[in-house]
Image 1 (cartoon, rainbow, N blue to C red):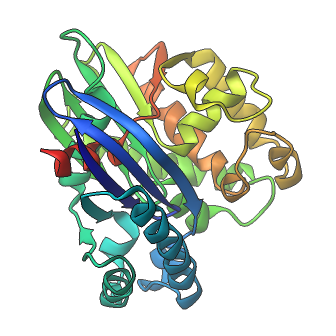
Image 2 (image 1 turned 180 degrees about the vertical axis):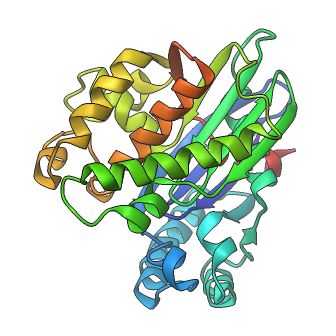
Length: 305
């Protein structure tokens, strides 16, 4: 076993996994897995820069994670940054801050690398020779990856729950015109993804990240967030559609009333569910397999081998 630590810093959240990895058996044993909503991508789509308050929220989470990593004695650490820091003109400030706190330089990875990590994390434990379409709905981008035991095609497109919300939503609940604008961006992005990834050919759709797991928690009727019950659950399209319609018409307070809804996701969940719903409609998927294992697990495996 090798004790590893992986950090995934996205547009909306920063997450840590400390785990013991056994490459020979494919076993990854969690020691600590946590998530903090920091909204690093606050305003990036509009300004092209990382806001000072967003950087400070992220650095505060990094200081917390540094203590956890030290406590568990991880032998190796990899810090991966995704959409928001790729897009920002002042990303060097972000890189220096992380290096000072954690002692490693964050790798601002490409969309293709992000897609590969997501696929590995989501499918490594799934048995059989099924063909998978893995969809990772992030804050700033969404990754589409097709493969069986390896990646065969992948594409990252600039739609995410934070990006679409900041771009289009000005009312609560969003107006019909705002929803139409979100849907138009999603459909255009799906056209772009489908130009290089065969979205309709895989037998199993696997959904990743907070928008998908939140929909699953609501669908399962959970009183509190239960990762074990959510992981590998299968949510039918009709249920996704019904939840999407309900959230579309709900106010901020009504969305926040869901006990499984993280406070940092309340204002962006509508866009997230619209992306998931559109993907299922485009691919004809009757259900989505929800995975709690995603890019974070893929990052851990990359440093374990």
